Image (cartoon, rainbow, N blue to C red; front, side, top):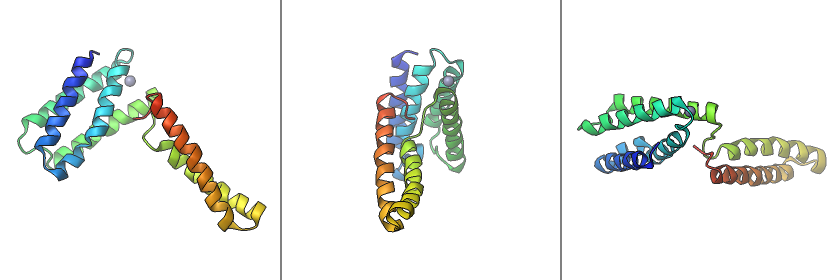
Length: 154
Ligand SMILES: [Zn+2]
């Protein structure tokens, strides 16, 4: 899809955000929407679903723009559902991960291993635990950075 369309959508998102008060603006999740638009656009060349999602998302944003008092309770729910269904498509079909995905996984692995090694090697959970967590954080944030570089983070 033409990048012109993406730029237009991003401008639209900025407008929505600037016109909303702060509380509403945070619910818009502008940065996440931006990434979603960019990913959808890059996949829409090969993926019909992504193309459809992008068209629908555009309609959705335009509808929000036309509303004066957008982001009432109902709109927030609707907006979140849109983001959730698109995210799940991107994660399942295109193997994208959410930001901090690897960190959370490796931190919990590190925590468990830390306990095990702490008991086995040091005979002291208090020594193993921080070591396990540190290793988990190092691996996880490395993988997150790598995924980000490859454009695989949602
Ligand atoms: Zn797709």
